[in-house]
Length: 355
Image 1 (cartoon, rainbow, N blue to C red):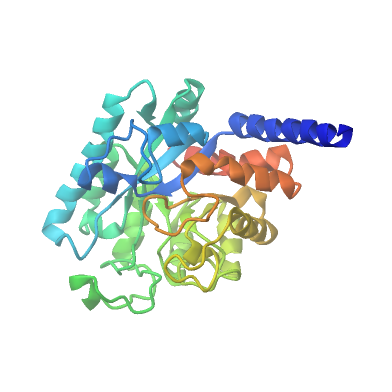
Image 2 (tube, rainbow, N blue to C red):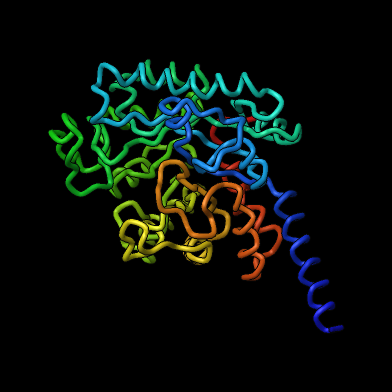
């Protein structure tokens, strides 16, 4: 009985230590698709629900301090002439929710905003655009998104654009975008996009981009970049994941990869819901990136509300402390855990768009 009581006391102290560490860290999730639910399903983000991966109560329960919300316009569902309007409606959907709950969530436009908002015990929301087709080959539209609060853009989705290649070998099923052949990376206009994003202070996101596009970006950019929601190719050989040479190049650039929580990107053999990853698989990918690129270049990029196969013990954002628990179990130092949970992403965002 005494041994049992001693064990339980140790376990409770150990668990409380993990919770305290998780609370002290600034937990930063580099990508979610929750705005789709806000706009199309009229979800109220302030109210808890068993549906969906992200809402304010779940973010609070999971200790998530910073959340990047993507404005994603499906290239087949929305014709080019409707895509800008769709982005504007998505921006409005999120900002309207922020205006409804100003005491719990606030839009962050700078790294200083992030730190201030978190210090005020609120969630810092960052706006992103997923898929460069949404700028309609127009730098003026890119700048206007920035003026509306967008601070990150994912260059491609599963389709090629007129100026950048997707990671998909032969994209099909994306309407007029199927006619765009591979450029071999960035076109000259694509390089202009990169330079303009650097100039105005918008984070370049190379998740979904081809290897050639990524390498071209590194030739042009003067700022660190992110792969907001990708995984390690050597652990799961999927075109959405990053090979070792790209991880090393990302580290040299000073950038960060956010590990995606989709079971399909974490482990092989996933078919529907027949096989699901676990938090251990997520941390396996973190471990791998740490070995190849270093602990300063990895973070979290859940892709919540954009995936239907999260790990069994990471079913929504309220379960984020399970990652901290696994990192502690594997012997990571407190300093390194804080980098992985959010410090690395915050460093990049500060370097790109300042305080």
